[in-house]
Every structure is written in structure tokens, then in C-alpha cells.
Image (cartoon, rainbow, N blue to C red; front, side):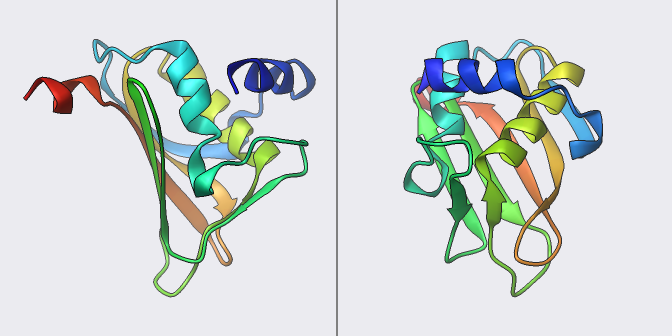
Length: 131
């Protein structure tokens, strides 16, 4: 999963317009890079595979969690479901990470729902495990 994301990044240019409302929450939150990449592909019970793979959730929320990283995606319009391509999801995460290079963050992935946008949060699971 980690190498799959790295390979995808080499083929997709940075698209800052893919994401909006990025907030850097805790730059000190420990999120292992490898775990982030694996969690990124763990949404919708896994979107590993070809670049055209899609996350089509039957609910308005999906979680991808691996090791120290957890992504939570939520639709922003009632009655909609998540429907985002692997490439678009990578564009959103990459653009958000460009603004917040370390730690936890949140943002809005423009598009990505059956109608409208999706909000997402990347957080460290280490805090919850330490409590």
C-alpha cells in the first residue's frame, strides 16, 4: 500500500485546487508516513489496485486506519454518499499535506460525494491509544 501511493504520486501532479478549507491541527501529532499511505488506501474497506479504482461507500462516512494514522471521510450534504476516485483522493491528500506537512489536519475534498464535497480528517491514533 505504501509503495502503491508513492507510485501514484509520481504520476499525478500537485493540484492545490483539489482541496479547500485545510486546517493544520497539531503539527506535533506523530503520524508515520508509511501508516498514512496505508490508511489512505484503507478507506471504503480498501481501494488498492489500479488508478481508476473508486471508493463508493453506501454510507456518508468511511474510515481508513492503519498503525498511527486514521482518515475519516464524511459527506457534507445530507442524503449523499461517498463516491471518490483513487486519483482524486490522492490529489486531496497531497494538496492538504502540501499546506500541512506534518501532524494532524482536516480539509474539504472538492467533489468526492454522490452530490457535493466530502470533509476529511487525518489524525494520529497514538493519542487515543495512550489515554
